[in-house]
Length: 485
Image (cartoon, rainbow, N blue to C red; front, side, top):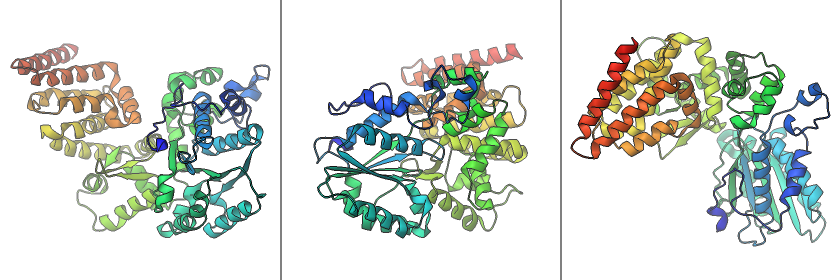
């Protein structure tokens, strides 16, 4: 099926364009609907009115995402048309706003389509939710050509024991709906949902709601007297965080981090929320790494480690904060922006504990890095934890220990998978937020020095002179450091 092979690049160009879709109308509807970015408001309105109570959204990318959804809904080939489209994003990412815009666009520009909803799953029990939707479908006129059902916060059904409400809904109402060729369901969720029903799995498409890029917030930041680079680093483009900052430009990094922690962890038991902030110091972790980080009192592992921390890990997976990556063999935060904000809040409140965690974990990854064959899997983690340990300790140059470690060990890695090492380094280990954190923490000079050393290391496989090239690069860096000192 075509829908299984589509990769959604939410840039300026859609993967495909459907001639039945009026994209200009979609953009018009989106720009005039509900809580939108201040940059699309009328320039004639007073400045204070244009800036108040507005949640910033990425107009260009959101409009493109809305157009992609239209493509999927209006696909003329029924065998290619998905029955279920899931919009996934963390709390405050704009999912509900986007769903409201979609409802307005369909109602205004598509008279042949009946729109039902949005129905918010967080406001009722699973049984009540199923009855609400079933009754709405049953009340439709006969021979309705097309129906779009909008479901908001579908992941709320998964927060019941063993996700019982979600799977009851899947086996009942949802399974019946996807069998009807004239129905398309568009739903929002904070978490990825793994469906048990094969029919649903085969006719399901998932889309991630994008955050704002640095260039998207420039105008709005300048209107409020904020430096766009600073505004982006404070919020990392998260719409809810930007709304807070734009409403109160005096907010500091710690202010936003503390407010973010309360916002993202709302409703969790206190112990689970506290553990989540601890885990946020680890961009990725397995049980062994978590055991290093978890016992903050003394050096021993608490007797109740497995019952306490692993139960909390499972709870955080259930609510969509953590996910398990089978390919990488570790746990990761589903939303890296959330992780970064939680980590900032932990470091600001408990700097001594943060230093201890970063030091312990850095030492563990350094031990792993002695095996050249796995360097690409742990290199970024070593740099990350060494740099943050130095930063928490008040070092003027947090990148210093990381650079020294690379210089000292470079000659021990002639057999590393250098292409993979370089790719991991340049991409922050596959996490764009980690890359932003390292760029900010290390600074351009130390980033460039580490990159040059790695490039020299990668040339060891090019010929018999490779080791000399590496040693020369190491010597040049050492001489430069001595000159600076």
